[in-house]
Length: 79
Image 1 (cartoon, rainbow, N blue to C red):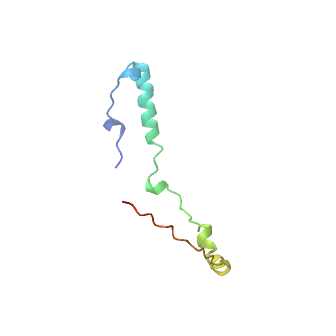
Image 2 (cartoon, rainbow, N blue to C red):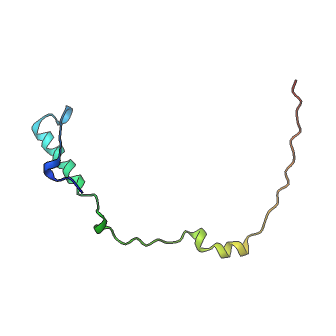
Image 3 (cartoon, rainbow, N blue to C red):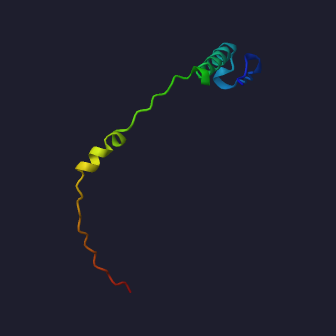
C-alpha cells in the first residue's frame, strides 16, 4: 500500500531551509512518487528473441570448426 499525503515526513537543512525552497522541494518529491507504476498500469511486455536465439539453426549449419595448434612454452628451471 502506498503512503498518502498525511503519511509524508519532511525535514529541511541547507538550501531547502527557507520556506520557499522547502515547499518546492517537498512538492517535487511528492510529484516524483506519481512516476511509479503500479501493477495495474503496466503494459503487456512482448519479449523478442535475441539474434543468437533466432538464428541458432543457421549458425549451427554454417559454422566451421577452426583448430589452432598450441605450442607449449619451454619450461625455465628456477633455483
